[in-house]
Length: 475
Image 1 (tube, rainbow, N blue to C red):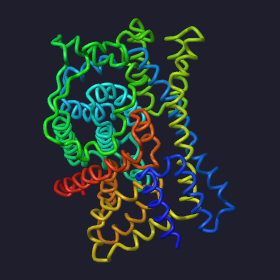
Image 2 (image 1 turned 90 degrees about the vertical axis):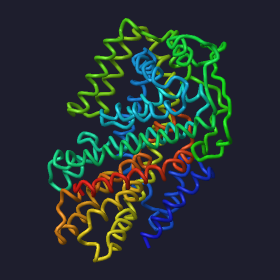
Image 3 (image 1 turned 120 degrees about the horizontal axis):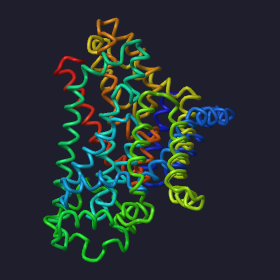
Image 4 (image 1 turned 135 degrees about the vertical axis):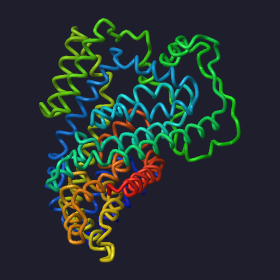
């Protein structure tokens, strides 16, 4: 019964947000509350929610201060050279823009933290997508998949969890998987190329109205806020064919919005720039990322210290500090609110025993004849299980059971651990992953639109990695 109710709760949640019948925050709170009562454990709802909030509170704190920190770094101009470099590559070509999004997300993902990856990627690419009238769900989908592939680095989380759960060395798990993961990354880049071509066909040939130098064009695009180079700088669109109905643009309802603060945020003439402090900010950010990788302090503490230093040095005057915090308050509130709402969902799933019941049912339904192929089974199961469960729940709760079943048929724990990484490109768009709310929130994309667009492509990327792993003999 718990299994049925668990799957019903997840299905109800997904249907409601994908059809936009409820907002994600409302669905994350009300749906599990109703199902908790249906299970007969309504009296324990408060305990489940408090447990969920307690487990996610450090994540919420990390996201709050990370958003402020990287927001300040954007304000002072730390990432402007990155934007200019990408614009040199992208120019006004939608195909290059989408491929550039995948490349940027993959490179930044090397820090092992999805939230910072999405903040940097969206901050750099959002103005260009808006300026060219491109689909924002393409940006969020490509960024999420690129980050999902790169999330398997040993310091990113899943590999370390798998190594801990099965008492293995993380390097022994990750290094042999590199060829398969590279195939997956190439698959994401190939998909970005295809989606970019579709966007190019939908929008037609794009060019800037002025015949200016590349540097001038970049300044116009980067300063895409109202009044920032608006005169003559908006790209002309010449439609070619009727590709507007493709799913590459499904759910993109943001084209009518005004550009807002994110577009103005990269204005090359904005008063918040601190060019004389560029190398201080670069050193501070590099030190912060290094400290995260080396785990010198808990990540929330690192970002708290980083925010205090960044604000104090860049904006010594108290009114300026208050203004910078207020400028990023909307993003902080939206993301932290979503994280605490997700705590209700995860708290009920775990507290009522639904998640354990669902995992046990899935493991029990594996036919006996598939025993020698448990690595393949684990790879396939990692798609739905890491989407509907936290990484902790999957790697510490389900993987040891699967590994024990595989060992009975001669499948090594290393093969099982490698196979368990396959589902990460899909996992990064799970409603239980706080970082995805940073992505859709900053990109101003509805979570349901992002989900409807990305799930099929992310699942295909996962299966590509699985097939490559089997071909190379690592799974």
